[in-house]
Amino acid sequence: MERLIEGHKRFLAEVFPAKKSHFHLLAEGQSPEWLFITCADSRVLPDLILGTEPGDLFISRSIGNVVPATSQDVDGVTATVEYAVEVLRVKHAIVCGHSDCGALKAAIERKSLENLPQARRWLEHVEAAFAYKQPLNSADGESADLAALIRGNVVAQLTNLRVQPLVAQAVTEGWLMVHGWYYDILKGRIEEYDEHQRKFLPLVR
Ligand SMILES: [Zn+2]
Image (cartoon, rainbow, N blue to C red; front, side, top):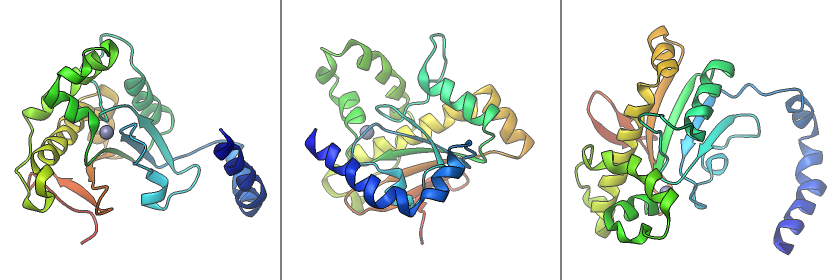
């Protein structure tokens, strides 16, 4: 824990004083423009890779960046999406998967989830990734197969997001846009799913 306490000391001494007025504004409320749905993976740091600040991103994280297709049970992601769209009126909703995702590895290997009853049920939501699996990309090297499945999962979860009633209505009314991203940890680059070309293209060209 020592490292975290030291980090918080540095935040209090350096970061907070420098951004004090910004934090004062934020203490009154938030109006984030983006809903960011991503994996719980420790290597995905949205604010770091996007240059965003406190107050910018409304974030939902769960293993496999899942958006459940049907919500018979209550679940945290669907509740977060509802709040982001209906209350915060975010302008964009982004589903962001990442390279080397353990959730998709587990979906391939299945056995690794034997002792994780909740995770196993949760990750049934990524099964659709197989149906949306993207073409292999030689630039992904040895992990091309896994990367193609992870991209497929982004498309699958994006499809689930689109049909959520509040999302579908907001998209039809024209004030919400949805996006599917793939973040490559090794290269540091983000790709965006192009709905018309039905493929992932670099976000920065
Ligand atoms: Zn992951």
